[in-house]
Length: 327
Ligand code: UT7
Image 1 (spheres, rainbow, N blue to C red):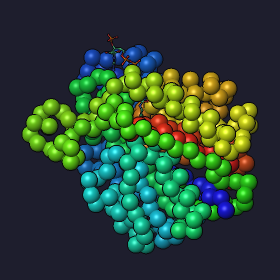
Image 2: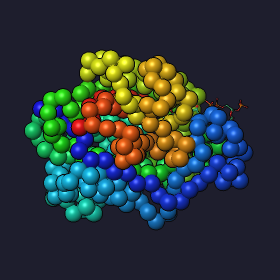
Image 3: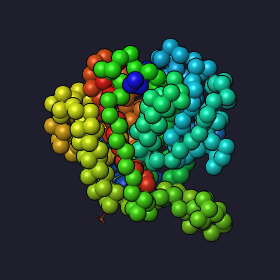
Image 4: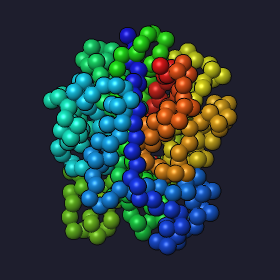
């Protein structure tokens, strides 16, 4: 039995931070940000709004589209690197906020590949008969771990949440056709939040040195992202036995428009079959794919029977893909 996405939802905070706002904060320009990344603006959560609140709003929309309720869920999985707390998990907080049954609920950290990893877990649970319906949520408030004095990172990230209700597919032709995931921890230092964990507990010194913010060797990460996203895309197509020319939609992780352009070219896909949101939301890490997917489903671009390939790369490093026939 295959599993399928039965409903999608997303939520981004109302507050907009434009490139022009950033020009006033660091030595950068709208022109540099647009041409080097494709980002025009991004969203920013309030100080008092934690990730679980964004997750709640996205999850409610996904449940509504699926015609199921929180009570129907057999597991709640949350992909995030910006949980409300180190523990308890944001998934447990979400279980409570949604009024779901006391089902298995947990967070996991897979960087920007979080939603892909989450779908793979949900698919496996459903196939194994552990769960019938799984709520997969990806949520990030990266603006809360941003170093606002570092122009090489602070212009890139935004906040948001995306969700999917995963359940049994209507037949064997629809739903998730292939999954592929990989990781390489030897390169973890290239994209890291150094302090606040057991390796470097919080101290006055770690705060002074800004070690509770995201650190990225952008250029290095870029090279790996391009290579591994291509690998994940090709593997996904191969495993599903789908030819490149039969691919209807690419929903890539939104880190940089140049990475997305490159991937589309390698897949021989015109850009009008690629879902792009980076201009509006920047890089929302794990949330970027489910937000883009939700937009394209709701505005009618993604239709029944079409093939949709989602591809991600992120901290860890992690990368992977999920290929579906939309039902
Ligand atoms: O989501 C998880 C995975 N993340 C990614 O995939 C991100 C991958 N990396 C990237 O998208 C790009 O590497 C960045 C957008 C982060 C940077 O773009 P780049 O073309 O790789 O720039 P660079 O780091 O090589 O820097 C080029 C120049 C440098 O100046 P010099 O040394 O050539 O004088 C930087 O100091 O651009 C400068 N620069 C900036 N200039 C204006 C870096 N950031 C900025 C900025 N505004 N915000």
